[in-house]
Length: 173
Image (cartoon, rainbow, N blue to C red; front, side):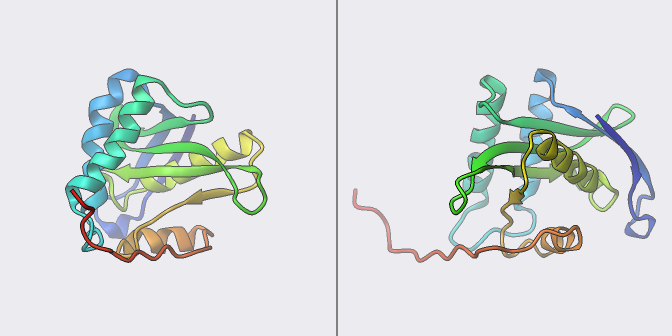
């Protein structure tokens, strides 16, 4: 799909040559294992790492079982070595009621962090959205994920809304 020489050699690991391709059934185990990286930054105190990983894994298993219309799963690799993935969805904008692209999940392996795999996946996601005629590409990021937020800011993404949560206690049994 896309091929780029990316990475910041100052981040330890030098430049990598990343290609991005559609995921295949044999990528399932890698994708599910890599989703665990999504909690490394520290989830909100009211969320357990297990529930975050399971929520993401549920969406990924559903994709591999029967990909929803308007979705895609892209895989970044270098010389056949898998580096990360992006799960893409088509959503409808609340205000404009028009479809737009959405990065539902973006994760890279610990070894690939800071070396360009995430950037290659973002580039590929933007290409995917443009190819579908979308004028917008959205994503969600946890507040504590400062590193990812800085990357998104640097790449031109802007916060549009903030989701607040108030815990009201345990549900009745």
